[in-house]
Length: 121
Image 1 (cartoon, rainbow, N blue to C red):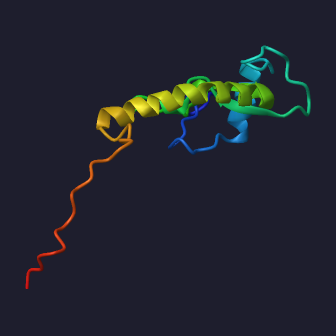
Image 2 (cartoon, rainbow, N blue to C red):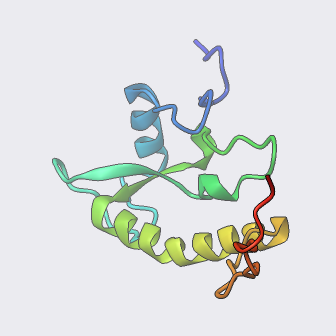
């Protein structure tokens, strides 16, 4: 019996893979954490981690697919995510600079104000 779909694809970035996909990915990696390479013990906490982060997707590219998922121990996954945070922040700053709203001016231009002595009636 063959599967009707080659691989699971999330409809959007927030789509959570079903348990069957989680089990298939775990078996594909033979129960090893793809970050540390250590065998995941029974009952040990682990996540499905995106090998290529979702924020690095090009326009129209869906990275929330089964082939981009890998098992990772919770601790190793948290460390990898923290390490990528600086890279993501830099990319966000470059995008903001490109669109002209970063960096904010430290001393914005001030107008001289309105002339209070002459009222227009």
